[in-house]
Amino acid sequence: MELIIPIKGAVKFNITLDPTVWIFDDRKIDLDEFFSGEYEYKDELEEYTKVTSAHWSREIIEGATFPPTLKTEKKFERTKVLTSTYGIELQQFILNAEPSEDASTFVIETQEGDYSCPLDELDSFLLKFSHKGKPLREDGPVHVLKKDGSNINNPIKFVTAFRIE
Image (cartoon, rainbow, N blue to C red; front, top):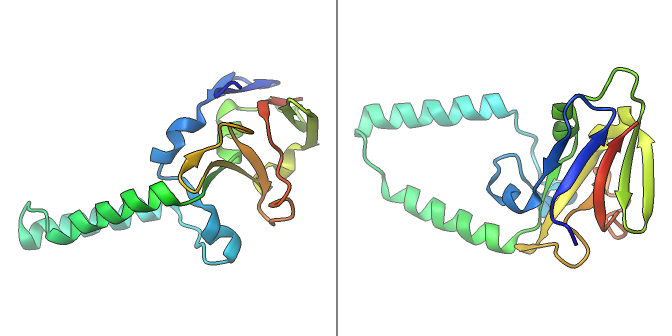
């Protein structure tokens, strides 16, 4: 099984995806929270601004020291990464590849066959890349899930490439 997934076809840039590094990506989504309804969508720019502002305020008030709470937060995050199920939105990767203007179809190539859908439905897909802290080595490297949860028990597995037509 290949762990690298290419995005190819009618795109300006052929991109390769490496799901093994997404565990460190801030855009990852805890799928247990997402499908239970507890997930809150976060605007990346707004989130970054809040974190930066809080850090700046803390440095002004306390000086450039690390309060003891930061150590426990990091430990909690490390434990959560080792036990949670994560995914990431597919749309951002396809948009970075810049599909051509005449492209209309998105194809998921797998070892079991191809699945196609209209390109405008791209925002309804998630890529599951870890299950309970472990990478999807046996039937992965990713599982394609629909955001509405309709295929959560029967995801698209054994993904080998994404093709834009």
